[in-house]
Amino acid sequence: MASDAPTLTPGPRYARFSRRLKAILLDWMLAMVLLFGALAVASNAQSDALARTLGVSVVVILLLYEPILVWRTGGTLGHAWTNLRVVDDRGGHLSFAKALARFAIKSLLGWYSFLTMAATRRNQAIHDLLTHSTVQIRDPAKANPGQFITERSEDDPAMPSRLWRTLVTVVYLALGVLLYFGVLAALLRGGILSRACLNHDICSGGDRIVDVAAAVAFLLMIALVIGMGWRGRLFGARKA
Image (tube, rainbow, N blue to C red; front, side):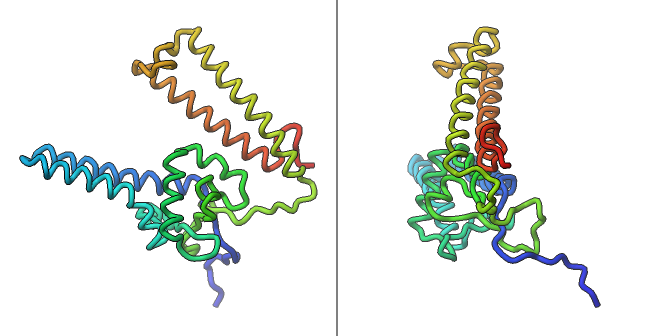
């Protein structure tokens, strides 16, 4: 009797950004529950010592939550709930030192760390590249094709050289930065964004919305340029 189950191709499946974002949001919600729960307990406590102990405990938990779980189980609760795991390039889980370094780099760079994903063969963010790790699907049988990629090939003879793609991408990024500052200048001249918000972070509600929208658009533009440049889709370094 023929099976209706889909045939799975061999090899690791590297998580797309959308899947990783879902894991991050789940972990963030857990952190908020912990933080607000501790604040509620501390605000009702009659002891300053208890409040200080709770504060220190929450900070320690938030700092060590990801490194310890990545080290011991291959991922956070968010990773587990989204069928993901963090894998060392040598196989298995990361060491605690690597997991701690990975978390520190990701925390330092924030969303900028993910801008390299579209330009790497295995969808690696900067914190993955620097710690020689990848984020993969934990159980391929439970994953949809839209949740992962297989390793991209770099052996296409029609693709411009890596050096040329890098140089052209850098030029586009420089032009993108100039465009971003030009947009900010136009927003200032039009009174849509205040100079106090831009220079001193003293923002009204409307200023904050415009500032965040411009920053998000800038990040998306950078990610798009890097991805298109590495795949040979930018004018000047196009795939033949």
